[in-house]
Length: 271
Image 1 (cartoon, rainbow, N blue to C red):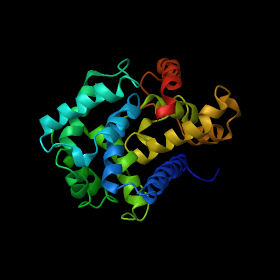
Image 2 (cartoon, one colour; image 1 turned 180 degrees about the horizontal axis):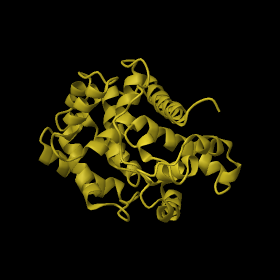
Image 3 (tube, rainbow, N blue to C red; image 1 turned 90 degrees about the vertical axis):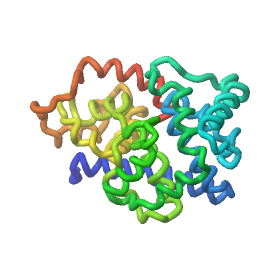
Image 4 (cartoon, rainbow, N blue to C red; image 1 turned 90 degrees about the horizontal axis):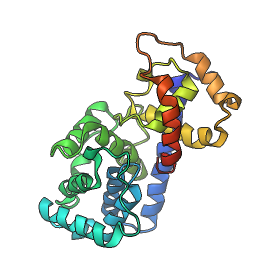
């Protein structure tokens, strides 16, 4: 394999984000209003992996055009609609969810972000999202209320903002650096399998494009061949390129691999 491990992960990340952009473009071509679709996509990202679908349904039940301009009132409306129309069929997932990520807190974050209508999307459009400075400035806007952190802003950047910009052709392509999000169990597991036990996480943890690349490889390759990783040519080629870095070992790599395997089985469909 001529490409470096970093180049392979970046290419996989671009493929994943271009697929997201194409999905958004297809939905927009079907007549969905851009502001409403952006609103629904951010809601889904705020739901995290466990509550993505209920959050998307809440956004569909309460369109951004109907959301009150008061954040407190908006939060009440979202919570009531979620209770009456959504969680009866799709209950909130609370197991393995940290208190900071509880659905009620995420609804509060959504209310604060969108209670002023499409203003968030307009503000984000002011920044050059092809640059690190532009992405960090956009993330600061999302984080200014204190209801979401920079890593969740990174997830919204990778899963919504960048694909949306590519779909609407306000960005020429997927940038080579994206604000990083949390390194999830599927990412850790894919990295462990592809890059070896002693790889340096700095290869991907500081760039959301690389994280998306590992998620793409996990979905497209790892789930198909697991548990026979020895038959994966991609893993064999990449592991030869990544020399062990004893100065920055993977924390608890051996102990976490089995735990991550179990976690991935429960969460892979929503990554």
